[in-house]
Image 1 (cartoon, one colour):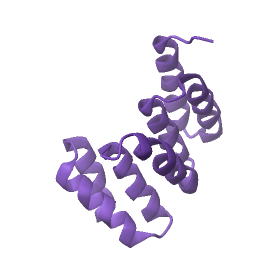
Image 2 (cartoon, rainbow, N blue to C red):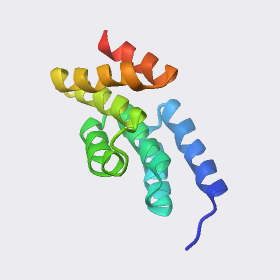
Image 3 (cartoon, helix red, strand yellow):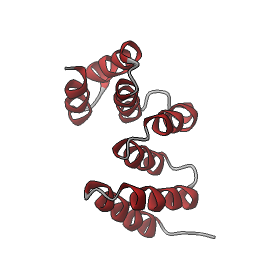
Image 4 (cartoon, rainbow, N blue to C red):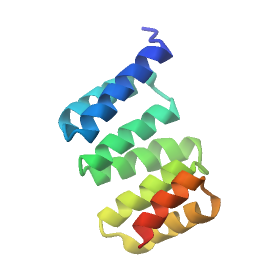
Length: 120
C-alpha cells in the first residue's frame, strides 16, 4: 500500500501532539503505525524514538537508534543526541557523555542546545 508523505506527516504530528500532552501510549501506537507505513525513512524512525523517549522507553529508543538509524546514517547528529540522552536516563553516563560531546562539536544549534542540557 502506497501512503502519501502528507498523510505520514499528518499522523506524525498527531503523535507528537498526543506525546506532548502526556498521552504517550496513544502517541506510541500512532508512531509505530507511521513507522510501519514509512518503513525506512529516518525522520519517521526519529519520531518513533522521540515518543519512546518521552514515554520512558529508553531501551526501545536506544535499540531503534543503534539498529536502524545509525546503521543507515552513522553521522546523524539528532540520533546521536537522543542516543546520549537515552543512555544517560539508563544510567550509562560515560557512554552518554561521549555521544553528547560529539553532538556539541558537530551538531546543529538545536542539537547542541539539547545535548548541553543533558551534559549538565
